[in-house]
Image (cartoon, rainbow, N blue to C red; front, side, top):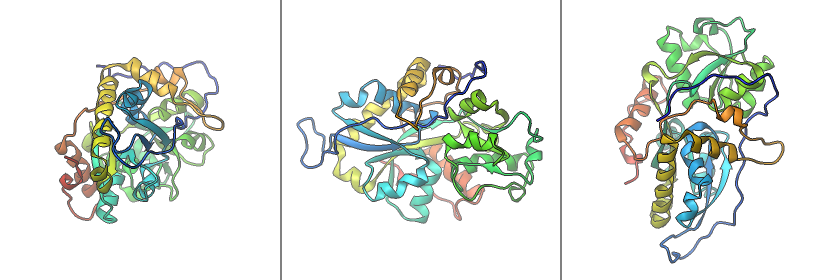
Length: 332
């Protein structure tokens, strides 16, 4: 297995901000079950384009979904919050994103979401707070009174930062968070322009920020209450799962193969992440970024105890008003 991160930076050069766009495909197929037991053969899938999704991208790149008879129409998600309501409305069959947003929507909005697979468990270097090299902020304590950029209010990005700040003796009222989301592909530019004072970034956006702007790590978010924290999972609505049992089994089977490869083969991760490209103004992950970015653990089966940690930490930091048992959210 590979876990360590080699921080070898390329010579100064402009590296495009990372924003992944979709792979084309035919319109979604609905109706009767196909000969291979699939209720649908083309799926609209929205996934946050971060290293947390590496297992999905490996399965897509290596044709593992196709071998199960599935065509995937992939859409990059700015954040889970942005796509959950669209999924409920039927725009997406499956989404992949952070557990915090899914749990919030399930508990607070009573949206019938079902976790069908785990995506990632955080490792050292895959989520961190960054500043610019000329910043006066050299310690977490010096973040007091300053603006820390996150990609959506009160989501996993916020929770990880809140946990680390609190455990280092910093009251969350002393640090400012933006009221409007800052998409990860835009965050490094806002940091460099001084629009925010620090940024909480996952891979590969973190390495891209280092490469393009010289951003420096202030604090790793893989510590304390969020050490080896479950970050991302894949979700359907309960009604969709009931209507498409064969399709769901095929998707999970292909994803599990992708997760296993992502967990054991760095080369597979790099190839897959580099291959997700799009036209202007979208970009791609340059090889120099893929080759040094940190990676996560990619589980091949659901562990309810592990996912329960997310709800427990959400309650600890006020993102839930009461304790919540995740079991009803987890598929069979």
